[in-house]
Length: 160
Image (cartoon, rainbow, N blue to C red; front, side, top):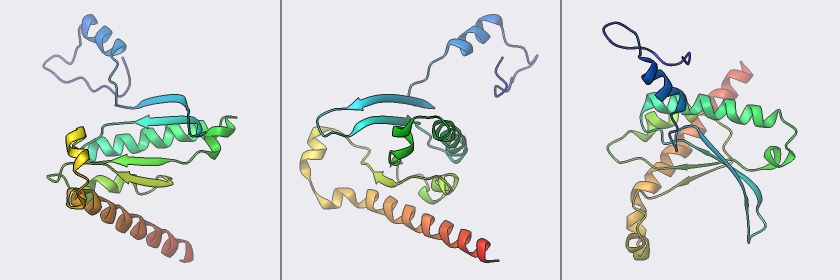
């Protein structure tokens, strides 16, 4: 019943069971917003915008969703939301093109970007070997280049 669901099939009809399933579906990590209070370090209220986008198409959807979600938050009276930093936490496998994946995020307002390893076992983390971060450093460099190019294009357009 949702306007963004495209019906595919021979007769373009979904059963009532399929429609009910779609209506009640919850997919954690896709367009998920979690609000809470950080404790211990005095960080205060925190809002996490979570999406596991991993293709150019899903990054486009994620970028639109994030902008819409944060715009509606910014227009609210929630002072904490207005003052909070916006961090991107990102990783992709080396088979993907981070340059292409970052393009849809070019106009986002992230305060900081953090590039995390895809391996999160305590054994892996215990190594503390700088060479283990080679791919994450590549992601950071690509992100920085993308943001600089976007800022340069914006400045050129403004002065024209």
